[in-house]
Each structure stands twice: as C-alpha cells, then as structure tokens.
Image 1: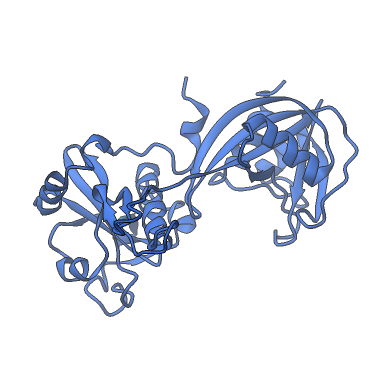
Image 2 (image 1 turned 180 degrees about the vertical axis):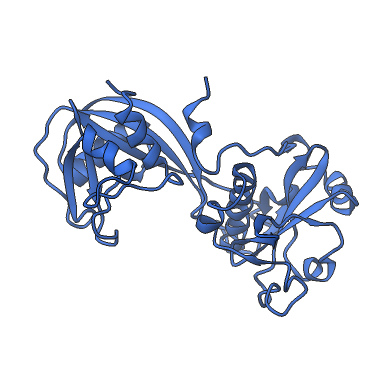
Amino acid sequence: MTEPSAATTFAGNPLDRASEKRKDAAWIADRLADAQAQILPLWKTRPFIIEQGGTSTLGLLRNGLIDNLVARAPAPVFLGLDNGAPVFAVDLSNGPDPARGGVLDGIGRFNELRGASMILDPKDAAIAAQAKSIVDWHARHRFCAQCGTPTEVQAGGWSRRCPNPDCKAEHFPRTDPVVIMLAAAGDRCLLGRQPQFPPGFFSALAGFVEPGETIEEAVRREIKEEAGISIGRVAYHATQPWPFPSSLMIGCFAEATSTDITIDEEELEEARWVDRATCADALAGRNSDLFMPPAIAIAHHLVKAWVEGAFD
C-alpha cells in the first residue's frame, strides 16, 4: 500500500542526498568538477524550466554550460546524487534574468514553483522544491543570528558558520512545522476561507506549531482559536514538503466535540460545516458554489481521504 504522503506534490525526491559526504570539502569539490555533474539554476527562487517540443522539463544543465554565471554566484548547493551523477543548485539572483537576453535565452525560462509543479514530472518537482527551499534559506540567512557577522557556507551548502572567533556559531537550514487539519463531526467536515481566497473557495484550517507544543496540541489550539470548535481525538494522515519558503505541512484529521462556530475574524472570513456529498462534488468540479484546493495542496488530499472514509 502506498503511504498517503507519497501522493502529495513535492514528495518523492529521487536523489540520494549523500548527507554523510557533505562535510568532505574535497569530495564536494570533486563532484562539482565532475563532467557528469548537473546544475539547476534558480533566479529569484524560481527554478529553470526547459521547454522543447511542447514539453517542459526541469532545467538540469550539464556541467560547464553556465560556468561564467556560476563563478559570479554564491557557492552551489549540493542536492544529491542521481544514479551517481552529482546534482547542484545555484542561485543566479545577483544578476539579471539569464533566460532573457542571457546565455539561457531561448532554452527555457525561470518559472514560479507553484506553476512549475503542474507541468513537471513529480520527481522533478520534488527536486525543484528541495532546491528552492535551500537556496531561499541561504538568501535569508547571510548573517549570524548570534553576533551579526557575515557567515560562510559549509558542508556543501547545508550549513553556514560564523567566522567570528568569539562566536563560531553554526547555522543549519530549518523547516517550519505547520499543522493542517480537517475537523469532522459525523458526516460533516469543517472548512474555512481567508479574505484573500477567490470567491467560493474553502480549505482546511492550518497554523504553525508553536514551541513546546505537540502536533495534537497544535491541531486543537488552532481549530479552537480560528473557529471556536473543541477537538478530541486527533489522527495523523500525511505530510507534504511545502517550499514557500520552507515548511512541512502535517496533515491531520480531528474529531470535533462541539459544532457551534465562532470565527477569529483576523484569521478567517468564514467557516462552515460541509457534508460529505457536497465535498465530493466540489472535489470533482461539479459544484459551482464551492471550490476546493487543487491537488498540489495537501488540503485536497485530506478532504478526498475523508470523503472516502479515512476518518470514519
């Protein structure tokens, strides 16, 4: 049986991350010089997409093709091995878009990842998500959080070290845990909408896990805060890497022990109980008054699984 997480977008990264090799600077340098190495350029956190013959593929470029751009960019990040061939990501944001009048012009374009995920092979979308998250982390963590000194890239791009001899702090990429949960009461589930959502669009509730909090506690707190609903049993369903910028969506079902809704107007514009048949129609596009998240979002998979009886 396929685990539910495997069905989510950005899951299924095929690369061998070879994390045990990252601290070996000589090994990383050799991989970067390898003729079989592939480079994924990103510009403003957008991965490069190659467009040929009406098809779109992840823009993994052979080593040497963009050496001049790489030389002027921050150190490439080692993503892993693809059947032994090293794969790196490089951030080209310090210059103009090289796909517009540059060396990559006419080959492809830099595409926002939400849109790219819908046209890429799922495994390529997962690689692009990994690359986007780590490149974005470097862009936002150039200075030591303890003393403010500019930090240096270490471990093939998987840490940054403060060179200040009085500090020497080491910083690692962080993934923010987010609970996203579908509360259910009998044959109905709780859906909410934020003010920025398109008309008629509803989704599962979500929120960041706070320090010193379990997943179950976060689920109960968030639903109570946002919709005034009390929760008993909480069941884990699946997770999804969410590279916007770098979260792990933790999908759960929650058993409602109350049904009177009181929304937090700073978080939600509306919340409502929706029956199973209505959700099924909305997922299938048969309801013109209720719209659900697309399959790119774990909320879609939560509602679908509940409709199919996953939390009965």
